[in-house]
Image (cartoon, rainbow, N blue to C red):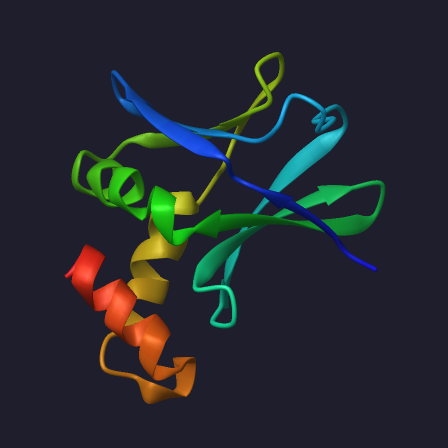
Length: 122
């Protein structure tokens, strides 16, 4: 079973967008994979992390998308934090831009996902 960590909050700071996971999430020995997926069922994006040779899915729910859009527009760096450990989410900007462009008008992602992405990112 894959581990899923949900982003619970976000904030813009200088040239960064900081994405928060619960303090109980251990970010030690986690590395960013530089890849994102779409979770149409949850209406979210997933950033892949790797820990001990397995993937960890980091779910970015719709409630966080406005800060993500602002980060894209400002060419910000995206950081994941549990309050103690920070990880730069490499390729976040490029991956999210690519997914948004692919989702636009594409019913293969589901009507609700398309509607929500278009409403926020376009």
